[in-house]
Image (cartoon, rainbow, N blue to C red; front, side, top):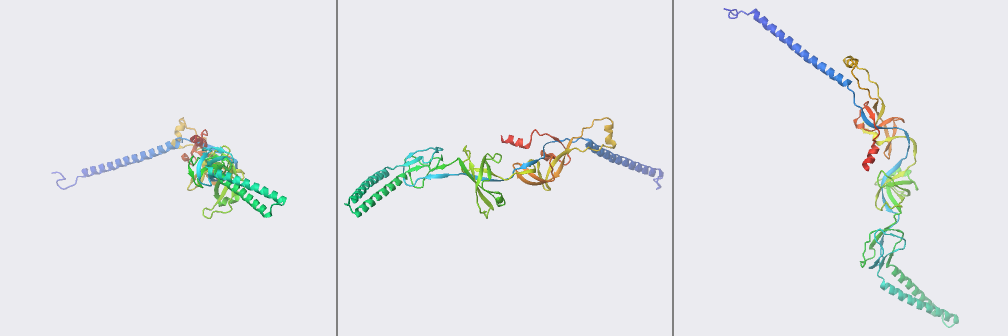
Length: 405
């Protein structure tokens, strides 16, 4: 009978189990150590690879900062109207007998534009002229009789009163007849006719509009803070778009009262419009020219980046040399492997203080000096210290002009 069946332990069986357990622990430690070591080696290799991998430079456009002559101005929007413009109307009722103009005709002052039927008025005038002629003859006879001592003073006064009354009646009939004719009050351009031949019209009916397009005026408003910068005769530029101020004028009137609701001041300027490109009622971009200022640091507004932390620009500087890699990272270089060249330029983020804006330029009042080279396009792909390559063949203003065309 064996020792196990008799209840006695087997020393050799227990030792064998302990040995197997120890071998299993050793094997587990070796496997876990290998895994940990492999992970550490892999992480270090990846880190060294990315540390030695060259960073591709970003292509940007730049501009050198130089002191410039600042041309400040007050920009707003105005409405154009003719310096002289009226809606032509008639003073009396009647039927249109003649219409002497077409749409957009240029007419001189006192040109006949419309003739109402005036047969009755012509007859009345003829009768009045005949009576006035007879009364004048009677007055002449009374004067002659008075000179001869035959006529009385009363007869002479009666004849003179009758003659003057007849003459006044002729003047009145002539004025009534003149009301049947519509003439141009000044030189200008006519609009679309609002009446037709044979039409019966009432007093006040608009026949057409007459506008003097050679001289225009623009009404606009500026903030009350700018009231002290305005004066009569000041140069004002106008344009149909914000990019082209093709018309020049001068201030002819400044309202002395500030609107208490809007806090704006009404201003009127006169514009010369020889080519007739401006039309009454148009909106125009207005720029009131202010005195020039020299030695102002300004950059294109595309170079300024606005963030929650403030306004900043990217300044291009020579790249700083990087320290040589050590340890395992230096081995490939020692072995003769090619190493990418360091970029020649890099950018530095500089926070600045922005001031006035004018014609696509922004004034920089602090933290930027003349001679600095700032990035004007490509900032969205940059980071502080990143490498860059300059390409100024296409700049933001050129791209905007190309898009406009």
